[in-house]
Length: 79
Image (cartoon, rainbow, N blue to C red; front, side, top):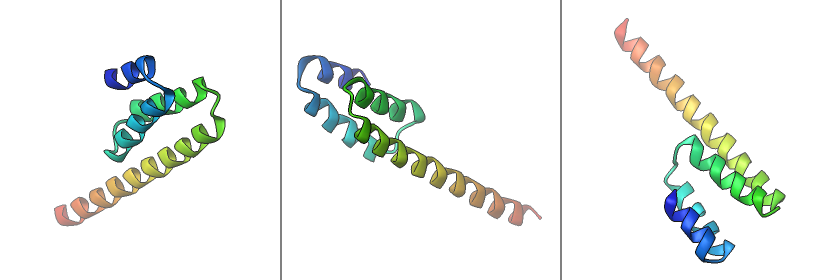
């Protein structure tokens, strides 16, 4: 996170955006997604923020589905 902030301060917005995009490939926690969305909103990039938010929603829903399926499998084996 600190690296992205320093990129934003010392380099162009594009460099920080590239770092955020690479970071999102690692499927980080919720706060990272919110930081990326807020970054885009700070620079008035509403369309980019919307696309990132949609990706975030898909990511969270896939995580939820994965957890539910995992619990069902565990419950099946416990019975």
